[in-house]
Length: 321
Ligand code: AMP
Ligand code: MG
Image 1 (tube, rainbow, N blue to C red):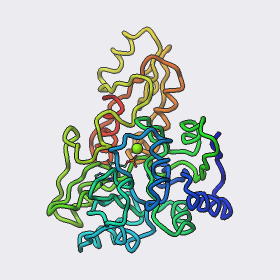
Image 2: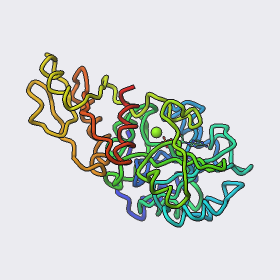
Image 3: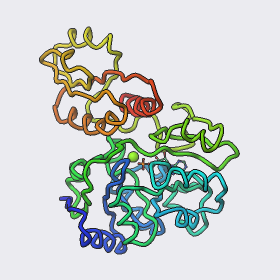
């Protein structure tokens, strides 16, 4: 059984002690929950891969207290990094930079680059301070499954794991994984869209390139099927929804904007109209739909009217791939 605890000072100290002893710990960030181990502790990182069932070639994000700690993990840090960190850290922006030699290969899945981010969730901040070094953490879900945005989600995914400590920091405020920005070349490249948008990055950096979803081999974890519920899942336009539900005899779970559009026996899950709140609730809604034991999950396609919606639709595409 996983052990979910309130993030009291004692619990955070206990979590740091577990990290020092080489045991993975789950903790909240503002994006999603992370399953962390010391960035320099290759054996503990191996345990994270084993626990998640994470493919060997999928690299981790190193969580750091701030720019100084990030610089210690990389060999190049330029004025673009200073400007980005000044504007977006602590927060949901991950920078990919050339990795320093002392960082073990296991922290980067053998890549010559490392992804670094300073989270702003107070529990993550306190844990980094108590541990006193970088913590590499993928999302705290079983590999391929929907990311965890509550401590309960983590405990559900790792119910069979003896004695995994989960710091409960409440539901994640953002609920979408961080924006990943590759700064190893002359032009910055967004490898994974997130709540730090291309437009916001552009204001600091000038032009940035956004990798198309099907060309994301550069960021291995962005493989097409990802963030997926266990139940088969499709996404349909609002106009198609009503006809589709009318034709479907078996109950399906429907993530929709208007529950009145969903007749019985189908099971509506009301989704918010605002992109920020939709993002914060998406993974919880997918997990709830999964628990309904229906044959299919149907997601009403959100508008792609701003970049947060685009990041959301990116995750929906992967959930339905
Ligand atoms: P997760 O924390 O589970 O969202 O996974 C972290 C993701 O960050 C990976 O799946 C990659 O997409 C990305 N990432 C981490 N390190 C690198 C890197 N060195 N180069 C490119 N992408 C990376
Ligand atoms: Mg993940």
